[in-house]
Length: 157
Image (cartoon, rainbow, N blue to C red):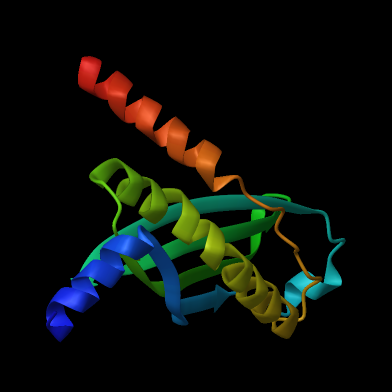
């Protein structure tokens, strides 16, 4: 058997593959428009969270997934600070059908990236001299299912 045929047979025998190859910080932004005056005010924060994901194929069986998180913290009517993070990852994925691949890119990969994004968000907030904000875990599978249902509803209308 040739090396190519043996490699193909080994890949088929292994079945589906999904592995994180690299985690990277693609972009980070921190704004505190009212510093330093805000440190003199009573601190009653209201936290807002916006979440988005995007993915693209960058090579054969290699996908880039980017988890975008925006945290907006208001003190009363005024913005205390705004943090935007794009946490990226390269994932090697093979042996999945289209539905499984879509699910992996839309739920599993973002869930894998979330702890890294949360750590970067917390670090930049503390460096801005604000109390740490530990974001609660997110159920990306539930968000993925909700997104599919929303798309289906829009298609039916």
